[in-house]
Image (cartoon, rainbow, N blue to C red; front, side):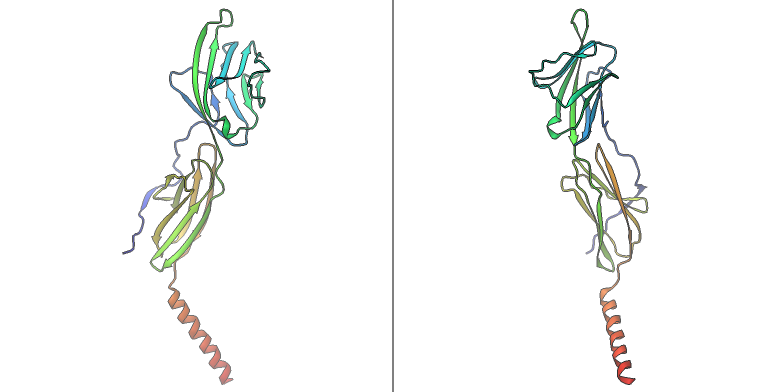
Amino acid sequence: MIWIYMIISSLATAALSKGSVECNLTKPTITTKQCFGKLGEPLMFHLPTSTTKMSLKKNSDMIFRLVNNTDLTDTNSKKDKRMSFLNNGTLKLNEASKEDSGDYLLETFNSTTGELLHNMNIHVEIQAPVSKPAVSQTCLSPEQMKVSCSSEGDGAEIILSLENNLLIPSGATEKHDVTVTLYGQMTGNLMCDVQNNVSREQTVIHLTKCQDNKFIFQTESMYRIFLTLSHVIT
């Protein structure tokens, strides 16, 4: 028995729920904030501007201490030298790496008394961007074909659609590929949409009907025989 995947009538371009690609720390919150950065790219921490004294730690390591917009972090500490404080209240990480993923703590203080005003927990995840997806069609018979899509990247979500109708999506996958079985006579534009929290890529191919290879072989053989006989007659 041949099993054919159903097509779900829905727009393929429906937005996926994604988090922020920057770290916005301007407002206190009682919950742990989450932000994402792209591997090898700059990452910005947007800091509160209403206070003049604050610090940022990762685990027990001091990332920076600011007083009146001046970085007072001990140069002998484990301060990340790739980070720099900008005048607009932004902390810039020049080139994010996997080691930058983790839990951070931002604390703000009263600049006069030193009293702790707020603290905020931030979970940072650095992801490798997805690659341009590779899409293929394989005919198994006139009644059955397989379509496949593969891509690299962290937490990649792969979604296939045919003429803007979603095929059953794979969701997040660690295999970085998905294969769907379809009726062999389907045609149209097959789009593979791959995305994660920091990137998105698409590839489109045109599906063609699967033909009966046996019929094609017989037709080609008869044509060769015809050419041979014509050559002998002449």
